[in-house]
Image (cartoon, rainbow, N blue to C red; front, side, top):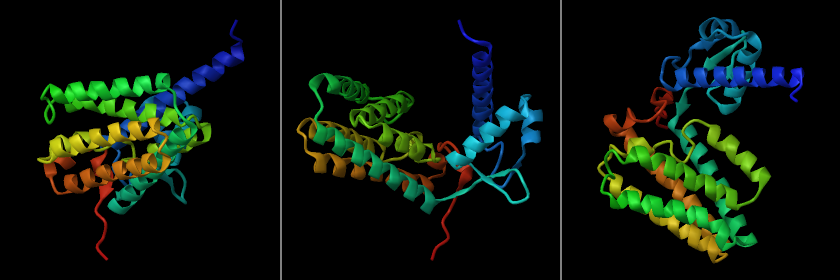
Length: 254
């Protein structure tokens, strides 16, 4: 039987998640623009929750990088330069590369590879349907996210998983951050084809226990996201498809 204190903890966590999701959504939708000050009291009134879950949500959003504490108290919505985003993607690539290398060096059984091979086959089938580029990108996003999650799992490293979670919480650093923007690019099919070949190659490298090759492939794979961002910055329709685009500030030329 669940004890009363446990119920209170569960309720508090649920309210924190509710506040976290609401504030994050407002930031990414541009309803809370860069520089906007956010206080606990203002969010209490807006969301209709007590200060405790609001405070926990704001702390988490600061850890994710969407908010920054300000000296006068409270938080402000952050903006991100292109340079910061490129660096965040590079960090993600380094971690994914390390995970792929660990998986290859430790060895992965055919049974462990079966789910990620199934995911590859589903992406192949989607590409074969001829809806990419096009409306098929809405189906590609969860498949791409699943592939990367399965890849992380093959490393079998709790510490690495924790670091990966932190790295991909940084806005625009996740593997699917620019996929929908990619759908608006003339180069979409070429980029998608390269990405899928890299997916396949890294799985083959892991199976062959080629650690250095697996690591190199995933670091190179992350560079596709950087390429997508650079192309999206040159295309208004593509840029507007980036979730949280209002937070991006062009880097000042040297």
